[in-house]
Image 1 (cartoon, rainbow, N blue to C red):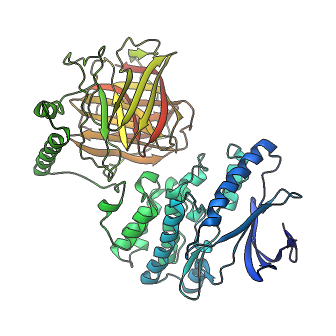
Image 2 (cartoon, rainbow, N blue to C red; image 1 turned 180 degrees about the vertical axis):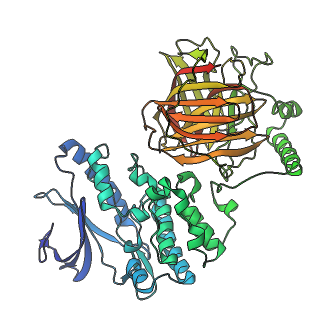
Image 3 (cartoon, one colour; image 1 turned 30 degrees about the vertical axis):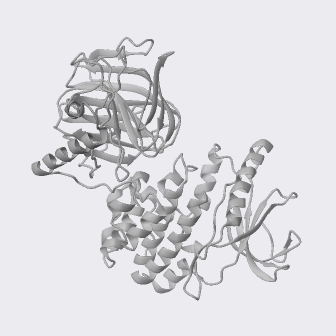
Length: 576
């Protein structure tokens, strides 16, 4: 730690310490060459870090610092210089010292702040965030202390965190991050095992929490507290004095599942200022209950068929529309830009593959179906370990030594990307490139069953942490249940029924998922009751009576476009 009066780099004289943490410190200093005050951020490398890792982390830090140094925006501090001190190994950032009162001090002095003023400051900060994110720079530590309110009314974002000089694979780094952070404003992904998977959505959450504090005068609960007891978080009550558009925007920004938040700073700004309808600016819609009337279902189906005819064109259009009703073995559904990934039945022609029901070659057509993810139905979360019921026997087992059960294999390309599936060495490997948000699934030759215990070992070898993978079950005439997990620590259970999604269990956080490792998924279905387990631990129970029997299979889904590789092993089904 630097002491008052220290002349850093023969130029910056330290005036006083502003903040101190495990990974570094912040100082106010005087630039003796420019004759003006500056902020000095000191970054301390992880103790005993090997030289190769440190050099790699420094290169990443320097890359981000070089970009940040070129950026100029009225609502963000300017980085003027950065350098490494050879004697201590510490790294220093030299930034503008912004004169004014921090938002934290303003809240402490005044209490809850007027909505009109908060919206002005929020719009300024969101403009800066959109600008930074478009250049690949994240803030990583938005909180009231890091927003300075200048006397002229301009809000300025300070305290940018660049790449840390700590090994992200070292558990000590997770601990240090927790110690130095401000948990009330940190998204859940910062505190879990994936705490280094921070992106623009993390900044959105932190700003939402900051605005919550500004408008209520109270710091929000931490993400950990909200996860352990979600009923304690009552944003509607606390935000009762603000307008509906602002209330909705803040609640949306603070959603725990990343997929439910605004997908950009621009989307949050438009919603906060009520400039544009949410459906026109977001990539992902909020969770809401969708129980369409019979008339609405008929209207949706008519629009769906019409859209298919317009898009597909040419000969055989009516036949293609008719095939949308058929059960299929290989599934793919594109997701509209305003919805979550949807998965439904379409097929890909393969010479050696036929559907068990019809004996016809799978169709190569893909059908866009309007979808939505509604709010979850009531569930409970027991602590028991899921077990195969006594007396149940193995009805179907596949160790993927060969393709005896006619899973879909081979490669193909469509409007939603490319898929390569192969069975080798006891693994069923899916190598997928998603050009847009999309889900894919397939089933083997398996007889429909009612009550069952299904288990499979699944792993994400590469790709986005929010890419889901799991199982479909009780697949019947295009309707089915989907149990998925994601390596950023979430699982859900959805029902696709009559061309609409129904969330039985919405995306829910759990610590039992092992990112990048093999995860054992299991579903116990007995009548209308389902018990879900991950790695031997029951994570939820739920009830639903829509589907009573059907086939089972495997699935993956992409929230965002990208490349990913998944493997599946030991697919087993037990029945009474």
